[in-house]
Amino acid sequence: MPDVYGMGLPHLPVDMLVWLAGTSFRLWAYGLRPVYGTMRFLHLLSMAGFLGMLLLIEVRRLGFFRDSSMATMRLPVITLMNWAFGITVLSGIGLFLYDPIGVGLHTMFLPKLLLIVLGLVHAYGIEKMPAMEKQSLKRASAAAALAIWILVIGASTWNAVERPLNPADVHRIDPRMK
Image (cartoon, rainbow, N blue to C red; front, side, top):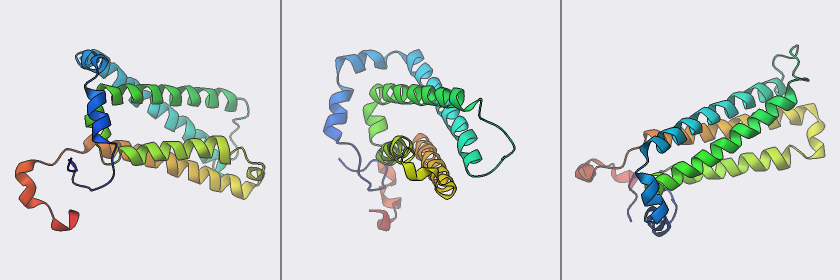
């Protein structure tokens, strides 16, 4: 199948996406527009909550707002952040299963998934290393976490506004993009 978005980047296997799109459950769920709207709302709300709480933690670790104390709030914020992340992932899976072809062929879908995995490896692997106790490494780690998750949001935004190429406009495609 040609690249419907004209970027030439790898995407999920089309055969798998077509199979998912043709399952009985997916065909049944596709008619439930209010469920899609609810899933989209939950996805955006929980993603915003996750990023907001991440910003609270990481900006402080970068050395800003040193006088503010999060000592008593750190555990509740991390707990809420983890819940928001879980809701984001579950609602994202729901949105993917609702329209596997439309979502799975987006240019930035695979890069977004890879960034999410990188973010998880960073949070639960790199962050837990004993060497992370050094202040300079804490700042670098905070900057890395912010960069990863902001890139995830950027990839999500790219996917949300991306539209397939119009076959009638093939003559207008820059030959360097092929």
